Length: 234
Ligand SMILES: [Zn+2]
Image 1 (spheres, rainbow, N blue to C red):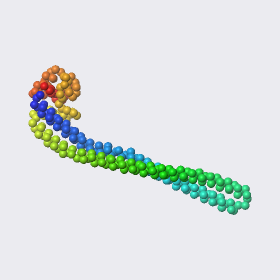
Image 2: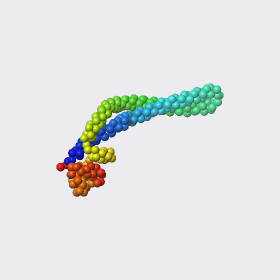
Image 3: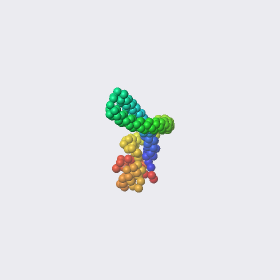
Image 4: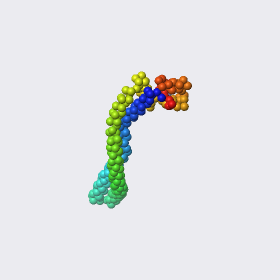
C-alpha cells in the first residue's frame, strides 16, 4: 500500500472522529430536549386531573345553588298555604311542595355523587403530582449525567483538530487536496478498500484496469462509480 494512502487512512480515522464529535455536540440540545420531553405526558395528565377536580367542585356548587333555590320555593309554598282558606288550594300547594321535595332529594343524591367524584379527583391529582415529581427527579438526574458526559466533547474535538493538523502536514499536498474534496462530499469515507474486485464503499464491480491501478503505490485511483480513492491491502 502506498505511503500516501496509509497516511490518508490515519487522517481519515481522525476526520471521522472529529465529524462524530461535532455531530454529538450539535445534537446536545436536541437530545436534552428528548430526555425532558418524557415529562410532557405526566404534565398533561396532571392538567387533566386538575381539570376534572375543578369540574367536580363546580358541579357541587351548582347543585348546592339548585337545592337552596328549591328550598326557598318550598318555603314560598308554605307561606302561601298560611294565607289561603280553601282546602282544595291548600292540597294543590301540598302537591307542589311534594314535587319540589322530590326534586331536592334527587339533587342531594347528585350532590353526594359529586362529592365522591371530588374525592376521587383529589386522589387522582395527588397521584399525578407524585408521578410527575418522581419522573422529574429521574429526568433531572439523566439530564445532569448527559450534560456531564457532553462537557468533555469540546475539549476532545479541539485535541483531535490539533492532531489532524499535524497529520495533514505530512501528506502530499495533491493527495490531501483530492482526499479533502471527496471527504467533504461523502458522509462516511473518502477512501475505499477494494474487496473481491468491488469498491468497498459503493460495492460496484471495478474494471480490471482500475484494480491494477489501485495496486500501484504512486498512482491515485478513484472509483469510477462513487469517486472515492481506492486502495488494496497487499
Ligand atoms: Zn465506489
